[in-house]
Amino acid sequence: MKKFGILALAIGMLTVGTVNAAEIVREVTDETSGQATGGMNGMMAGAIGGPIGAVLGAGFGALFGASGQKAVGASERIYLVRTDSGELKEYRSPNYVFSAGDKVVIHGNRPRPYGWTPETAEDFAYNSH
Image (tube, rainbow, N blue to C red):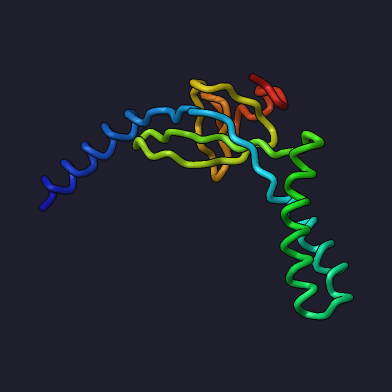
């Protein structure tokens, strides 16, 4: 049984160093905050017409809130990332700007520049590329 434990430890230590970086596939935009704001304002305005008016107002408000956010150029950045396991996932990045093909490290639920660690976070400039 000791040999199995040593073997498992050795294999575990060898695989730790083989972690690959994730890669940015493309940037997409998101208007979720505009939809939420527009939906809430539409619901309040539509509430004058009762419950059905509130539901219709929320729907139209969400539609116009998203298009309004897109029109003023306030869309949020979301990156489509191919992880080291080959999966495609979407991640928001309010602090860093990336281009397609950039290597990144996923920390929590945010992409960070390749080589980023919590200890070296101050070395990476805000909105760096």
